[in-house]
Image 1 (spheres, rainbow, N blue to C red):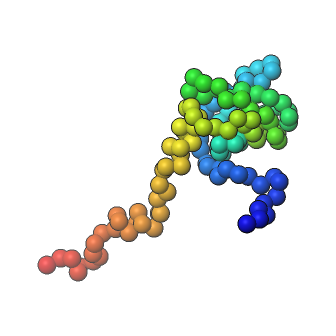
Image 2: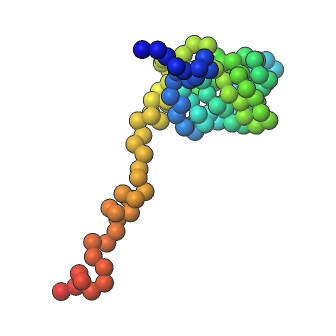
Image 3: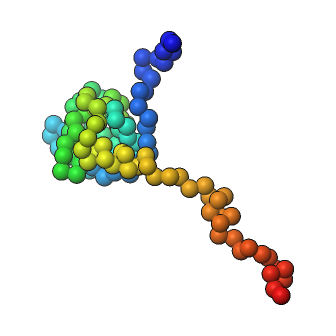
Length: 122
């Protein structure tokens, strides 16, 4: 079977998260929050470094190395040269993926009164 993905297609599923991290560049430490994470990279809000620069992401007492792929004033996208396979950040990714989304309509149906008006009175 042929692979029709473009060379820039992502090979990992991105997962929305809210993980506070510290990013270490060449000259400074910047606090930020990972808002999108996969085994191959992350989006970090609140931190920005020049594209193609290398950085370290500090979380849970461990360091993950990254390369900045794109950068805006208040956020950046990074790629991990070594895929996440273990450690605190990988564990946080797995926890986020195991959260079961709740259907708001089902919450309403489960919490509504069984009867309305006088029909329930005897």
